[in-house]
Image 1 (cartoon, rainbow, N blue to C red):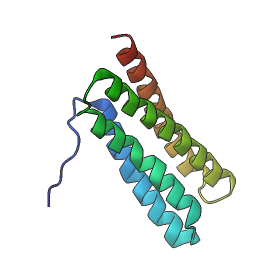
Image 2 (image 1 turned 180 degrees about the horizontal axis):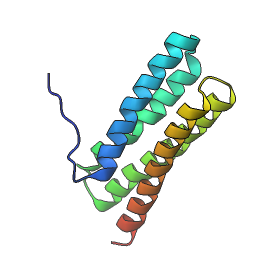
Image 3 (image 1 turned 30 degrees about the horizontal axis):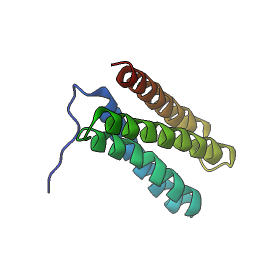
Image 4 (image 1 turned 120 degrees about the vertical axis):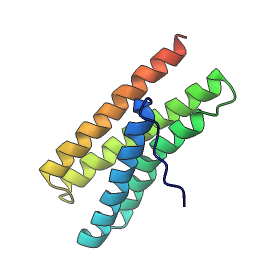
Length: 122
């Protein structure tokens, strides 16, 4: 089995990979502790797809294709932010967990916005 993490010189890939791992653990927590299967599946899908889209974009066929992957990752990050807020307000995660996840998704959103602007203007 190959155990590979993103290269340390790629902050967006590294951050999205680490975030995806947190989301997998969040999904497990929600299922085990709260027996919650619907919202946990939603946040799992959107939260892990961010990094997958970024990874896919590295082999894009064109600048437009690369930008498209980043834009979809940005939309998935925005959706994930929504699910995290909903989980907090519904009482599934506490304030400490929410603050930590919210800080991470905010950082990912900022990185994605900056990356899409850079690609658009290059």
